[in-house]
Length: 290
Ligand code: NDP
Image 1 (cartoon, protein in one colour):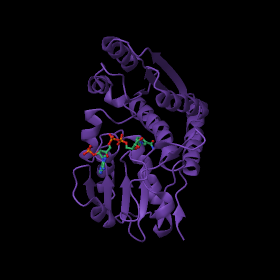
Image 2 (cartoon, protein in one colour):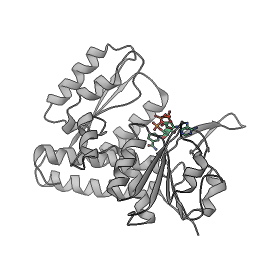
Image 3 (tube, protein in one colour):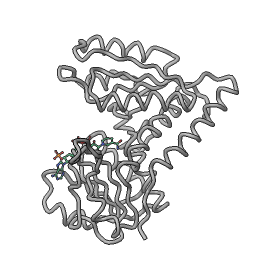
């Protein structure tokens, strides 16, 4: 019987735990952790993500600081804002919602964030620390994926993990985290040969591609654990749309040991891990055990 890895429930548990820890800090006379979220432009998906982040930050008792800038804002203006947030002692975490509009260099903006406040874990200092096995702020989505995989198997050691996708946001940090869990890791991408054959070797298959239901029967071996990071919107006959992952859930679920659904799998874990990262940044910066 397949285990459906319920990210919604796990994220709710994690948020409840964070809320309890924040309430304890505040009761002990400490300030509430502060998370600054910067949104540039009016990308509809980004607006939804930022809205959820702001709401959930407040729900766990943290301070949410929101900055919305016009799509045509000068890069210098954004960099100045990041510098002010770096210097602001009441701000523990800074998140600049990606993608940024054309004309703004995302790398320059990410590099401007104080690594101690980089709750997305995208700054090269945190990337380097993660790959060296040092304490780091770790990208939220891959952290959530590992937590979900551990609901299927508490010990991932020795599993062959195949990750499809090599982005800086998901695929590469995922590989580092699974190495730390002592998996044997293969990273596949658009130039890999025999993708189905590679995927069929996986005890743990992570799909982070951005192609609706691309991985099917030919890619998933019997008894695999499947983590589907993909979020793809498909139009439906009635003119609306539905969300699907990168894995053809209906075709493969029955043969899996465990699988994440879309929606309700990896997605909800990302924001919960962001709040957890904010608490980690708070506690490290201020020297307060949280
Ligand atoms: P990117 O577009 O940055 O990376 C996609 C990766 O998939 C690339 O490495 C690309 O290879 C690879 N790829 C594309 N086509 C193929 C193919 N035909 N065969 C093999 N590999 C292929 O995407 P992200 O990593 O940012 O996101 C991936 C998915 O995860 C998206 O659906 C996104 O919406 C979702 N996502 C979900 C999050 C969540 O909270 N649940 C958070 C972040 C992302 P190459 O490098 O060679 O081009």
